Image: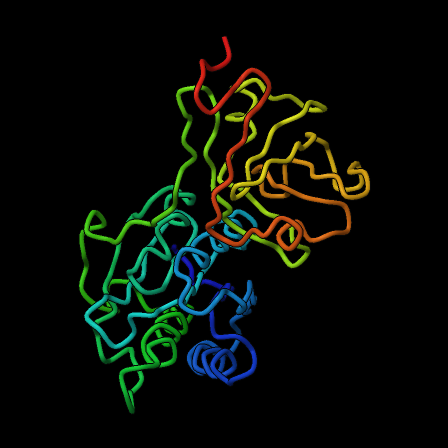
Length: 281
């Protein structure tokens, strides 16, 4: 970016009980007092790199140009790299453990990657376990203060970065779609790793019925437009706010009712498909 960034969007698994988030913000503001900081979320499940990556990739299309600081770092203190990735409209800072990879792809790919190895732009660490405070937050603050990315450390080849581990749905021989729960929001709606185009390609349509296999149980779901279209106790599928298929119930937690959790397998059978027969013509 030609100008110093004005905003930093901050995501982590730190939670808000301890002072980790506040300390990281204070470090950034120490170097860039005018920096605007946006809290994307700090409630990523502890150590859940994949969950953090999915939360981040859902958010980045709506974040302002500037810096994204994302920290879900179960490997802190090991030889995993802390990195800053330059993209078209800013920088992403975080551990090189797959957390940033989907967001980098969403933002058009990496223009340049630097490992945060220059101690001149870090805090003197009292221990190796808080790289968010000592390495990554200072990098964000220095970038916002006009420091060039190349000054922060060693340039590395983008192809060496750890890829994101995100599963894709599978189409079985009979046309059934084996999917996975990617995210459960606070209302209990269960987002699947399924694009609606993939579902319609298998013969499903708005208003139609879809057989859903959930951990040994089978239910029938109707494809609706919005949550309020669901009848009492009815399982529905709909396109959620991020453009993916979700399982939902009206004012009821689908996750609790159906016994689902992040990572649960779900099989969808639109009309004309089966788990062992020919798929739709």
